[in-house]
Length: 111
Length: 118
Image 1: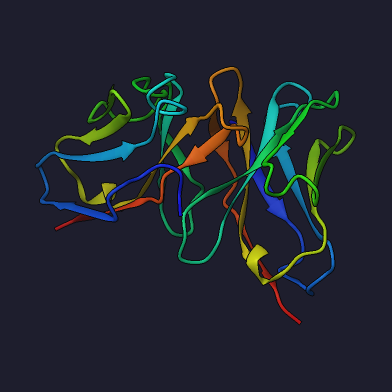
Image 2 (image 1 turned 30 degrees about the vertical axis):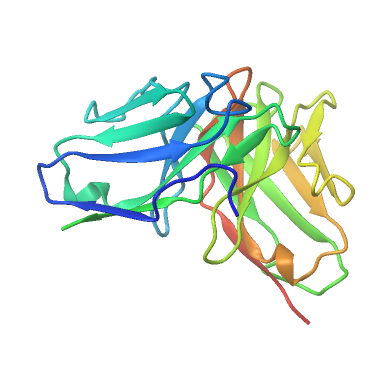
């Protein structure tokens, strides 16, 4: 069982917006601004999409945005495109000793 | 452009040692922190740990007694060793550049599947 909780799946049509949640505790998501999001696609290297809750690395489309409220972080993808179909994982620093924890992943399907 | 590539045996026998290498191109292995992450089949990502070339390490407490990481600066590579493996260690293993102090992985390898089986 993963330390951070994500929905198993979300879906949306091209052009729509979707949001993936990532819920933790004050020991991780809620207590620190060290939440990051990764895109995993079969046969490809995982890709960093968001770091430090809201920072978008160079090359990541501005359709991707991150936010946090309390113990829940969110990844929002606006203007969905077919190429966004992938598994998305959140991650956070934790003061529990493990240092880094992940969510269980969310499969995004673009209908 | 920084690229990482994992390499190593795809099959390891139970109780033996899993050894993987990550080759870094486009950057120096002494310039950053580096990490290993794994993903068991059908499950989420698991943090294994990170290290810095001068010896700083941090390992997941659940693996700490079995894991070690090292670097070969002459080959610009770093390695993971996991001893006394069981079927539960079967996973895709990823190497990644680890950014401190912000705790995220900005460059990843494609991953390599390691199966533990006799």
